[in-house]
Amino acid sequence: MSTSKATLILFLIILCNFSVQVVSVVEDCGADENDGCTDKKKALPLKIIAILTILISSMIGVCLPLVSQSVPALSPERSLFVIVKAFAAGIILATGFMHVLPDSFDMLSSACLKENPWHKFPFTGFVAMLSAIVTLIIDSMATSVYSKKHSSGAVKPESGGELEELPVVVQAGGGHSHGHGHHHGGKLAVDGAQLLRYRVIAMVLELGIIVHSIVIGLSLGASNNTCSIKGLIAALCFHQMFEGMGLGGCILQAEYKFIKKAAMAFFFSVTTPFGIALGLALSSTYKENSPRSLITVGLLNASSAGLLIYMALVDLLAADFMGPKLQGSIKLQIKSYIAVLLGAGGMSLMAKWA
Ligand SMILES: [Zn+2]
Image 1 (cartoon, helix red, strand yellow):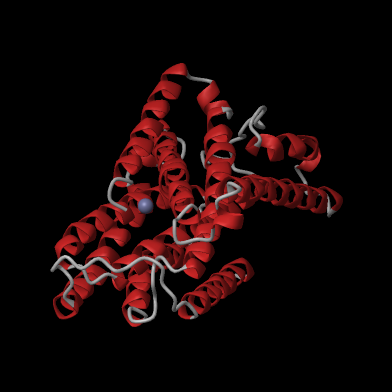
Image 2 (cartoon, rainbow, N blue to C red):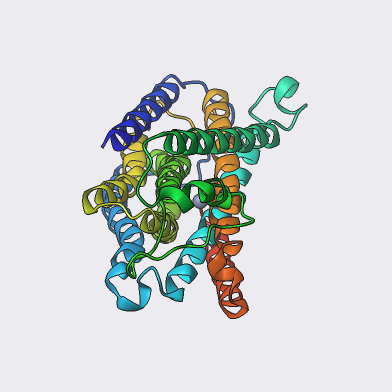
């Protein structure tokens, strides 16, 4: 309960900070395009349709992996579960590399920004790198604090073996020797540390994805170009559905209770519609290529890119591929690689539009 509250608060802080930055933006550098497509009155109903369709398609996307849990073939012990997770990890990886990182490069190297600091130094790469390192630090510190707290606490009945094993299990995220997943009566044996890890991963991923989701909604909401808006709506529906499948796969392995799962799915689903509504509300003051919004969104994108890339590679892909299940079967490994390529490929394709 407290973790979900903390996430909620963090989410709100980010949103407030973000909207304040956006509101305070007035000045613009480039001239607006005027090709006969700009029609504010015609664009409004399209945007309302966009809010509804994107909301529904995000929900379908994020719920698809979650609902699949009730399909017997997808229960955690089955290999299909691993393949779904690999597919989701591919989507997250491509979101970082193909959507968020290039967006940030575009924004921070924009001609609208001053020559002096912004064109002299690759800020995007720098911030993304720092963010990946910070994610690593938090990841390892949180893990060691958690394992210390638990090994110094009251000794559980069966903890003789578990205590020795804990550091190994905990290290599994880094990916070499996963503790041998012990099965308790057929249920998937994820010990406390690993489960907590999965939960933190799911929440942090949601935060990492949120910036991009809001920004694409914002640019749709602020746009009055009726020629391009229909194509953009269709693209964003697929974009959010695909990204939702990625996030859903990560929520799945966190084994949340129904309420928490629903809350996380809901948060993800409303981000882009919220961005559209925000863009609509601010469409008179918000200019996409004013220096302040370029810098704010560019830096936010760079830091979420570092976070997404680190988490996709280390916490999702390496953790699974170096784990006992995939190391034990070459066949399953090959299937999972195909799933990763499919997920990453599909999400990369979406980068063509948004
Ligand atoms: Zn995108």
